[in-house]
Length: 372
Ligand code: NAD
Image: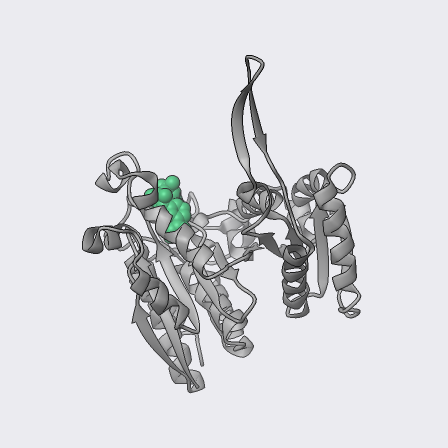
């Protein structure tokens, strides 16, 4: 099959890490008989430099014409880059916000997976980690508190701020369906997180999730209050498969979940709409402090490409192969600098000595384990 992939390399380490993900996709293509045609799309600081705006209409059209978009990261050093002297709606991040809106990317997925080889980076105790955890945070991205009406006004001499939290049943149903669909591709369990003991929006959330769950008898589901979920994530993360939640709860819980996995350079993400289309990007930023040095960790971007294969192209075997290749490379002891252990040996866990590699070498090593 031939697939059209929009590629937003972006700024900072973006071009370096995206180059490795493309390398991996090309390897998948040659092993499994697919052709990936790349359309380069400018967004962020590089687009400001070239066109004066962080995202052009042409760039949006190119993204819409793709089967999926693979992105690196955008933005620069917020203290020193001239991009941040511009008004907020002309800065690099405004491009990403507009793209998400134009593409109606309402479902954000962030896997939190603990690699056995990196368990030393996990801040949880060994008995809590057990044999590891593997969960997916599914966050509603275009509704709720962050998109409601807000105002600050003077009420009888007292400054008073109001934010509104609104969810329609349509918004809840579409994200819930996505969550159950994703669970079907995993261990078939959904934990729907809300604050139904207090909030009307959460009570509606719960009702609609129950209606959707009835269409997925093969997927187990439970409801959990958000405060309890925040506790359970550090008390017993193994219990979770898919965590389905609204925008603000997901914002907070996904950061908590990613923190317990270790390095930012390992964390993939996907933002989906109601078609197969998605935007796939690492969770980290453009890391201007290490850009151009060839030392950035490309694994989060490679794993984002694996998500692209799985969720936009339905190429599950190919996605499995990429994820297995990443695991194998870690098992063999290869690390970029951000995931190097403090000492050059992991004697305690009986693992092999580790070897530090650069961005391109890590990409080559991953490719070397696909299709062998
Ligand atoms: P950052 O994630 O870029 O960097 C934080 C730290 O993590 C740095 O020390 C960096 O070197 C390290 N790091 C990040 N990714 C890494 C990788 N792949 N390999 C090794 N180390 C890695 O966060 P920041 O410094 O707060 O932000 C820098 C710029 O990125 C800002 O302009 C910010 O707005 C932007 N940003 C963009 C996105 C995006 O494109 N979606 C997301 C977050 C931040």
